[in-house]
Length: 367
Ligand code: AOF
Ligand code: ZN
Image 1 (cartoon, rainbow, N blue to C red):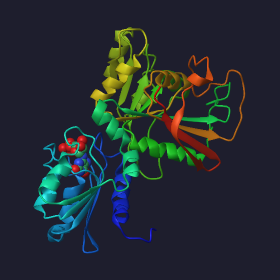
Image 2 (cartoon, rainbow, N blue to C red; image 1 turned 60 degrees about the vertical axis):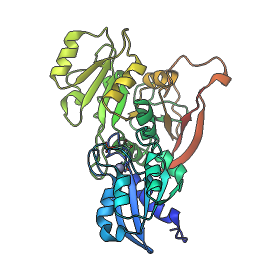
Image 3 (cartoon, rainbow, N blue to C red; image 1 turned 90 degrees about the horizontal axis):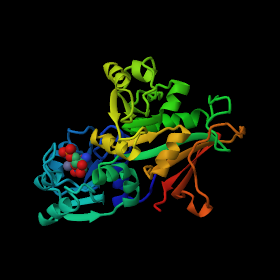
Image 4 (tube, rainbow, N blue to C red; image 1 turned 180 degrees about the vertical axis):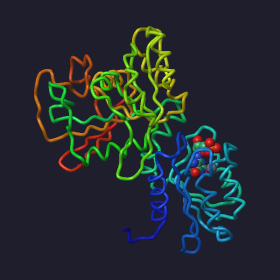
């Protein structure tokens, strides 16, 4: 617990609410708001669901008349546009808020500073940038989607220290321990889609659902499958636990596509060749408003997505094991580079421990 009570103290609470609601707001950002009057918290609110109230109106409703002369702490600049709800900046002005403190400006081109300008024009004192780095880290997927309409892709792998995701026999149960596996399910809860290659589906028949000790949110399941080898009796087709989308090529058989569609699977042809055009695939997933994708392998799809520059963040779970075997599949399978200087490097590297395993994460550096 921080000893000092200052702007940061209240922003931490607002950011906490945003952090815990991440994953439930669709392509909208998770936002928290705390209203403070004369040293007392009088209102709390979070944006809980896309299409429903933003954080500020929820907090204002709780504050009631106490909002007059109070300070509002918001993790994101209050909006200034008529979207699914009226502008939050107008609501704060109407409630008589005296001071607004925000962590970061809204990257949405419809807002982008105009919310703050509106508040200032109404005579409200404003401050921007309190815990901004933390807020920006959390809103990165929203920032990417709202400015490019492409999903934010997080690549996750679980491998041995020698980078193998399975033994040469194909046995992959279990590479990492229960703590790391639990962390992966928490990641699934926060993503809108989970993407795997058809090889992984054929090898493991996974359900790709979120399994936590309490109920979680299931992302849409997406399979890259250029020749439509996805079996009709696969769990992904049969279990109805979440929507299933297949990304395929123009060359794939229409009869198979029709059979999958009849079984409830959405089939999307990406590009004109015999393989899936991954860039086009991301564009199409963006059109479906799948703003964040967790890429869970296999090695070939990981390699292709990395090579195409479509990965925004990598989380590598490493078990302290060495399996060896020339034919043991590795986390990243692609032609690779001749020179170390050309290797894909990670920026903003972080290291965390999960039981006996470690997680190294970072962002592929722009070349
Ligand atoms: C806020 N407070 O709690 C959130 C904001 O689709 P709509 O109408 O809900 O608008 C979504 C946009 O509003 C979203 O893209 C972002 O710019 C802003 N989100 N703004 O003042 C909130 N969630
Ligand atoms: Zn708003």
